[in-house]
Length: 116
Length: 116
Image (cartoon, rainbow over all chains, first blue to last red; front, side, top):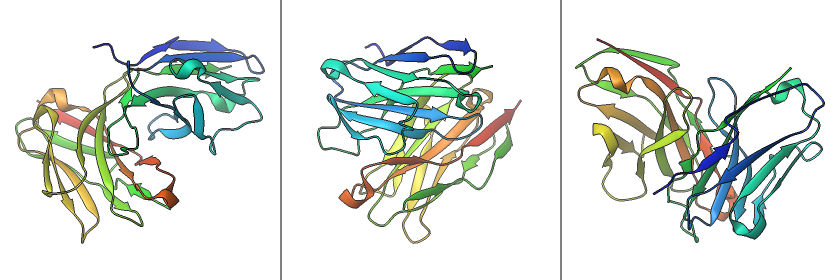
């Protein structure tokens, strides 16, 4: 079974430029998460989707970050414009929840963003 | 608000010796507890979880963890460490009550270094 797929794996951009990350979750997983992980720290939730609906985006900086999950499968996270402090690893995860919050999350390899 | 503490930034252990990675948590309800491992340039991999029942949980790669409600702890253990266990370990807690927003909160991580 294929795991969570993310692309690109690495991205280097100049500040004020836009950037987008793509995630393909495990087939059949209705819940999708985007996390931000700073070096040496634990992941922090940015947004959680249940199917197409963003059910928790309270930690998403909405002035510059946006996300979408069309058709309840793939998802895209966008930053526009990027700032130096956005340099981090962006992780996508998925799980089969359906009202069962004890299911573990499966993580992709992440996208390492460097903003110069 | 729920929280997770991993009091040790790094744990050093000789190969073949027992390994313990500490984790304490704070939630208002009954917790769901998870351990994940992260290898360099990889996403997080699920190791084990506690939902309910037996306080001793067995997981992947010979790891186990003991849930202690009175001490609000969920320490990860392995009887005999391998060099390949060297990685970054994250404890996470989820409060399934509606008030907690069904959010998974990660600790700051503990780096494990197993020396030959």
